[in-house]
Length: 226
Image (cartoon, rainbow, N blue to C red; front, side, top):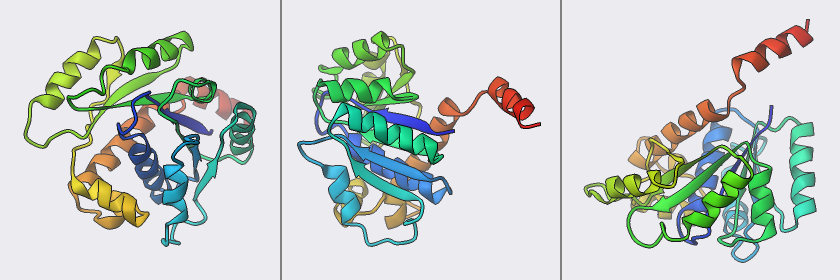
């Protein structure tokens, strides 16, 4: 069953594309067919990252398509489901337009990145309101967390005030995330034993638990297949 994960927030530079691309590679490396949908029509960073890749090991599992219209996005997701793509990651623009709204509406789960400290917290209210309005499952994820600082803990406390969960896994502010992006790779492709690689792997395992088919659905599917 296809799982659609939307990464959304109105703050640019909060880590949306970093999360989408690294999770997508982790999905593909785990054997899942994976599609990145780049909905950021202004920067198209995910598409540029994908087109710069020279790693062919995942060619049969990892794909990226641009989508800048609501109807096209709906069609893409329908096609992904028809073709039994395992994971779809939607990388959204840092705006509040209808395409972002539709991306959230199509999702099974939303990740809302927020940099530790600074101004990332200020624009979150509108994203939270949209998620609540559409009754979607979502969690904040703290990004750019300093390795030795209380900023991330302080940010965690502030985020919980919005009434949504906060992901237990944080992404640290380490240079490998930036280096990997420039090389058209994920952090695990650059250094599988690195701290960022472990962070992404744990985040993917955490996310899988949030979107997995529940036991009742599994039982019903089993009955239907008899």
